[in-house]
Length: 179
Length: 414
Ligand SMILES: [Zn+2]
Ligand SMILES: [Zn+2]
Image 1 (cartoon, rainbow over the protein chains, first blue to last red):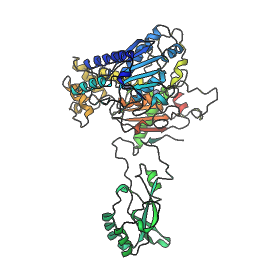
Image 2 (cartoon, protein in one colour):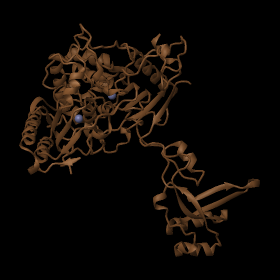
Image 3 (spheres, helix red, strand yellow):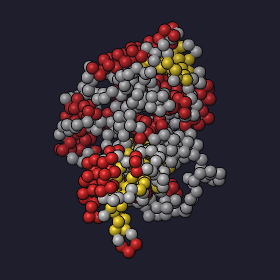
Image 4 (cartoon, rainbow over the protein chains, first blue to last red):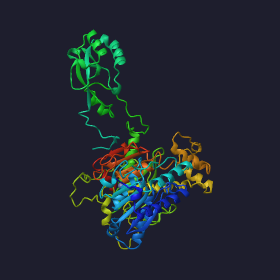
């Protein structure tokens, strides 16, 4: 997995990650684990999502899953076929504040997206190198770059756990910056 | 083949017939010296990393005579020379006129009964069956097995809902043998506006809730190779609709005219079942700040649980995960007994889940997974990955494979 030094990140990479962090902030304000993401196609944000596990009582409703649902619905509403949608995913990048978990990394491989940029690593659940490497082992792989605005991502998670949110008993994501 | 349940352990069986071993010095001893020698050896040379190895081996010689041998110490390096033995052990060797020889002992404690039997052929070891508190790892009662087979039959019935075989999932609360939710793959039939109060509308296939029935006696014709590998017979239905087996097949999805449903490549049966279980939970136990008619809720609760009186008690668990329950208890007395996510629940899957589904079941805290057929393409519970053995995960379920009689597929589909 590639590591991004902050200064080497292009402006657009940081801009997209800032939008993902905004999503995470929205999660925090709604007492959800503060992780957010945006999907980018041709330099434009085409969907966004943030964790919604507490509200739904469904621990699989991670930011990535929320954003994917939005994409699939929009594209089909616009009459795109499965083949066309597959072609779109193939050119999509994901910016997410925390390394996708094993479930989300598998989902991204199933959809066949192009690349993932993430903030902090996830050394309990991470599916992009931390625990398993689904981005390079399952079906069609994707590029993965970690460490983008990781400290911002981590401080959001810290704030969440420090405020002692009872609805999220345990950190679902670690508070460690990926190496 | 008959119905059977096999536990799929956290680590692959290490070559049982050739267990990893280490060399030790051992010596035959006089039985009457056993106590003295073992006591002294344990003191001067405890088998620190080999606590599973028994110090003394009993073997019966021809004519029924018993011979005792004792492990003196590890044999360091390749040299079989006595000089490599530490001096206080050498003293014992001389004092009791022992003739040390090299023996092999199992390097690791056995993790299964079979492994243990095999390693005892080298040198006896002790074996402590796993101390998990998950029922079933050490075997199932006849009654429990029958219940498990019946729930698996329900999952098998659900695989047939489309033109192709699909994966199916049934989530069960085993304490009351009640179905919490069930689903087959919905990669072709997603109703994107999931409304928790109208789960049965739209094109979501919401199978009826079955009651656990006795095994049906009507046997039908055998189609024994239906689920074997390398199927080429056109009469046999294809497995390409099983989403965990062929997760990338979604690209070939053809929109049927007049179909108002969306397709969704990620709506594998397990994920849908988890979503339905979560929706059911919200419906039965509306969240905090939701001032609902308590009597209505009580009815729902009573009809769905066994002993509502007992369940009123605040369950102060040692597990941090239950913080959620405690927090909710301030808002509604009924919230106290709401299980956290799918804690304590089992899931029955026809095919071994892919990594996405298997991880979803970790997130949702499923207790046990039963599946019928392995998934050589993307199975994450032993075939390709083995999530139940990933120690870093915050939750661990026990995994079982249910072996089916060859004709069962016909029976459930007839
Ligand atoms: Zn995830
Ligand atoms: Zn799956």
